[in-house]
Length: 201
Image (cartoon, rainbow, N blue to C red):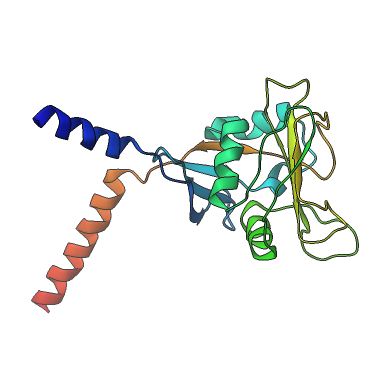
């Protein structure tokens, strides 16, 4: 009986939940990192696409690889889409529509992941991301827009070769960098010091 209970608990703990959007943080400033919790509980950070717009994969990794970033793969992008509530299906070698992407979700994606300014606009209108797909002939891209001038419907493909395309950014992701325990201890120490001084006063 105990074995059955233990097995049931293990199965319950092993169930994966959907990826979740956690928020944003800074690498170089201005909230240029989007924090996602993957369905296995890992926290990861995606670099704003505008930081690598127009770069080749090699150039982007030469700059940001030292910060722990790698070229995002199909699983990374699947988790990213899940976190923003996009419905999709992978169709190798063809364009695939991202269905049920509401205007609010699209705008939220652009707000977090950044994008390119296309046409007579003052703000980014399209998130065009290049990512790795070793099972296809070429690397893959996704296109999320808030105007039909960018991509309509919202699509992604794994049969294009646009390395260095002016409007595309390189989708880079890394394991989230935890705040060291020493920082928390230092902050707590300062807080206690201030409290003691207040008591003495």
